Length: 203
Ligand code: ZN
Image 1 (cartoon, helix red, strand yellow):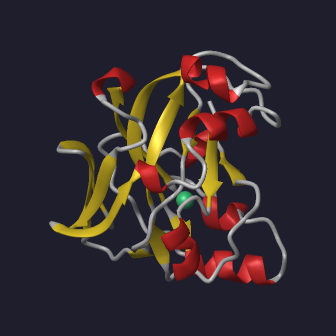
Image 2 (cartoon, protein in one colour):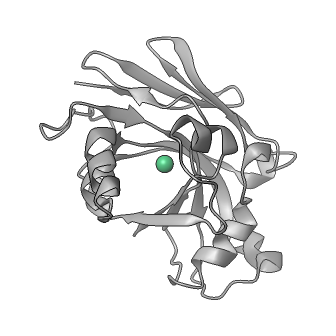
């Protein structure tokens, strides 16, 4: 499987990092080795002093597709989940400043938390999904899918022009505002509506 991530998909997060609003989605990939195994703590890597949490709605692809029309994109996923795109912000800023690819900052081992999934049928609208991240019990990020610049079906259409989507691939749809550093000892919990989707320890 592969992980496809969308950057800069929420206006309020674009402004907090002083980024330009893009005219097309920003895409990057994480390899399968980026997935944190279940029930494993997240260890802050030695190469960063500023690893940020980015809580994001996930879409799990259920069948192979290429050049998918956004009108038919909903046939390619059955489940919606929640995860974290861990980002070594110090390293990413350095790479961005030098015009270099982001992989070291975004695709490192265990940088992808893939929590639980819910059937898409359980949502009355995919364009009104509330989600949040709590750190040590305190809400640190809240989002609603209505605030996405590119909606799930548009993301699938766009991404599938470049990459064949396969069953089991996961799309990270971007983070709302509130990204911040994690510290050893933190407990991070993600919720979609009132459902706990993951709970992880930071070490
Ligand atoms: Zn992200």
